[in-house]
Length: 323
Ligand SMILES: Cc1cc2nc3c(=O)[nH]c(=O)nc-3n(C[C@H](O)[C@H](O)[C@H](O)COP(=O)(O)OP(=O)(O)OC[C@H]3O[C@@H](n4cnc5c(N)ncnc54)[C@H](O)[C@@H]3O)c2cc1C
Image (cartoon, rainbow, N blue to C red; front, side):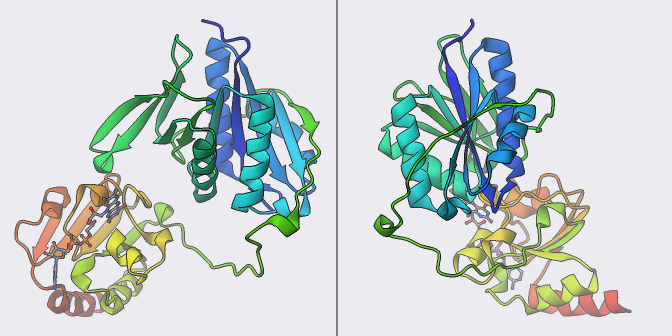
């Protein structure tokens, strides 16, 4: 079926003019769909002095790019972004709206879905439009143990956020048509403003070769985990409860709602192996676990399973490795 009149909008995230790679993944996927079943892909790009970047987005699949520029849009801010994109949707009524499932993409999509009383497929890992014109997404659940096929049967635009890294950005197409839209952001009306930005150095542990992972069995005391990681030149990861209580930043939380590891080696200490956690270690080549429970679920996902108290085992292991 050819969906000639249908339009897929893709939110193009940027920060200080640097386009977020995962937006390009979504753009290319959207274009693949329209190349197959018809329709137009429109990139929605908000930023400051950004219009020069817009045309280039065509190469990744956008037929057209709508640009809104304002100094306040240099980085993502919930209110003006949701206001502007919401206004554009109201004016132009796209059929579909996609965003990468980054923090900002999820924030924006959630706000828009509520505003337009429409369904939002979260974190899809596969995406298509069926012969009835319904957006069909594959949504992982229960830590990746099941995948639900979800259709948006009501509401417009049909919306989805797309998991990061599942599609590949392709530079196959030609330049996009660019439309710059005037929008006056009423800064004084905003409830939130950025006063100061402090940039924290974040290690992308999805790319680490070795990771020592701390679970709740550590009781939140990461000293031995740090020592072990230094000894074997590894990065540190944690289970979600440790990120929840603020012992470690969310960026190094492993699992379905965190990072997926692709390491050669992960040493997992004091983690039970809940489904939401193990979905983040499926691609690790060698898993060594230390747990005082002889039958913790993590055993099934481990190549080597050491039974005992981590506070006794780790100092001995570190000593041995140092020699
Ligand atoms: C929607 C949703 C999403 C979620 N997403 C994630 C996610 O992305 N990542 C994630 O990690 N979790 C996630 N969770 C939480 C998940 O279900 C588990 O609750 C969590 O993974 C458990 O963390 P843990 O293994 O550190 O703690 P626990 O389950 O409490 O396990 C602690 C383990 O340490 C062992 N232990 C205790 N003391 C010692 C000791 N001294 N020496 C050795 N071993 C010891 C225990 O035997 C036990 O096996 C999610 C939950 C929900 C509902």
